[in-house]
Image (cartoon, rainbow, N blue to C red):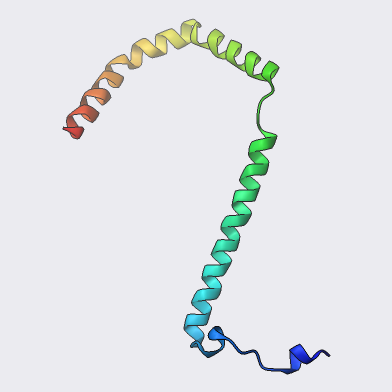
Length: 94
């Protein structure tokens, strides 16, 4: 056993009440969780980036979908709703 484990720890936190110490530990755990999520997000973002050829294929599929009859009929059917939503959002900002 080392001397560090035998000696009592001294510092600012050693004199804090138990509830304050628990709150600080929770805050530290949350900060650690945020750092972990940021690292995970950067890893997933790097894995999910499209190569140029995949991006081109995706854009071509999007163009084909938007030129389809079903897409055009759907856009025409929902046009009055989109106009109403735009009108309402502009009225709210005034």
